[in-house]
Length: 300
Image (spheres, rainbow, N blue to C red):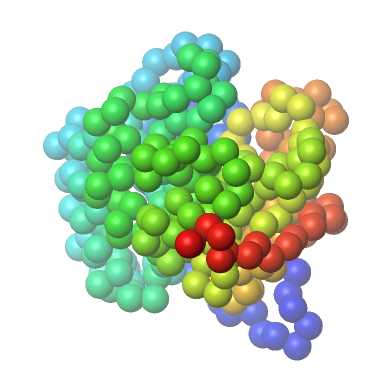
């Protein structure tokens, strides 16, 4: 990640990542942890579930800790004397509904130890393109627990368009609808991934924040590998922690994801090629356009 000229980059604090773990592939915890460590963060990683690969590659064994065991390790972490070192939190895919309340306890403990640590909630619950034709791909109880226990604690939420619609009970078909729904969440920053784009054959990421809304767009890529939502969430958070303004943080995160996807697809990979193309995570060369979004119609 490039440092702004004349601006001293703050030290990289450890980040707490709570999401799924796969044995093969770059989704969720694997790719996110690698990327954050490559940028310079130590990572505390708590898996919510262990899978052999992304479910889109076929059925596989699911290993989820019992609710008692998961709560116990959460309890251990909340009492750690090093908890105040954590500079930010990212949560993603959950293994079951009970995990949300336990994670909420840990989020509160981190914030008590370090009030400046932002919490980013990636509500991984469904999309428009799942194997079943679109919709929730987690049990409804799990989606509800994320909505009720985790989203209200977040400083940043990163839903896709389907997830935003589900969380707010709104139709998301236009950019203005996405913007209005994001404001309705009542969260300081909402980053809608795969938001409705203004240009044809384009992908948009729409950030709705305290100083207005901004969209970053780039060309769409056919059949992209899984894991882009996890990656852009983590990259936006680290850019935010580095002191970049919202627009620049969004542009750099979007550029890294776009470049990594493009390079992976060009090489015929069915997973994001984090190891081979890690420079895209650190300093992407891809150009991503951004524009300010007028909110008056959306908020009327």
